Length: 287
Image (cartoon, rainbow, N blue to C red):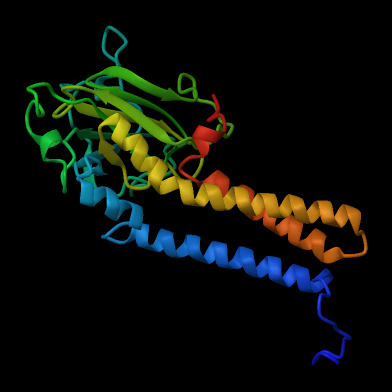
């Protein structure tokens, strides 16, 4: 019996060459499609399916709703060497309100930018205990702030006290150091205090990327895991299939489809892992 393609075929014939390539490629395409659908749901107002489950239980993590202000340039210092723009009473002259945290207008090539906000408690379903003054037991619960990344180097100050740093700013370096995920420990009694971000970037883009999330540290970490795990798992699966295809190509050098598929799947898997929110839990975030 002849297949429509004209090739001889019998029951039990294994998939080989282009046929195997097509099946594997279809599998990866379906996986990537599922990931894209999940991401689209995560970007919607209703959130992801995992987010629905957390919200149903009463999530204490929410998108940060506080007001931001920004100013390009670097801060002057007082007699003690402290950065004035990081201090609560350091003045607000020149700062402008913004909802655009990544490369807001007016930069004109400036390499330093400051972002500031007065910390507000998370609001939304299940966050009433956190938002209430003093928490549920009369003690203000600790809070943390998560952001996808800050380009490029930065220092974070809470009421003038340095709480986080990435890269070198004094003097700033001009080489690319990476874009780690940002997890700022704000501590207890942080509501109402001034969070100031001193950011340096030698490129055409600067600032905080993605919508910040705020909540208790453990809940915020769980929220990050829920959001980043699917892309990381699919990335590892795609990378595994890519390595497997390359091994098959090493065994059967005449089947070039294995090489093409292996390179594609491996690169797609590494890309998904690198873009996952869990990247810094799997790899070193850098200096």
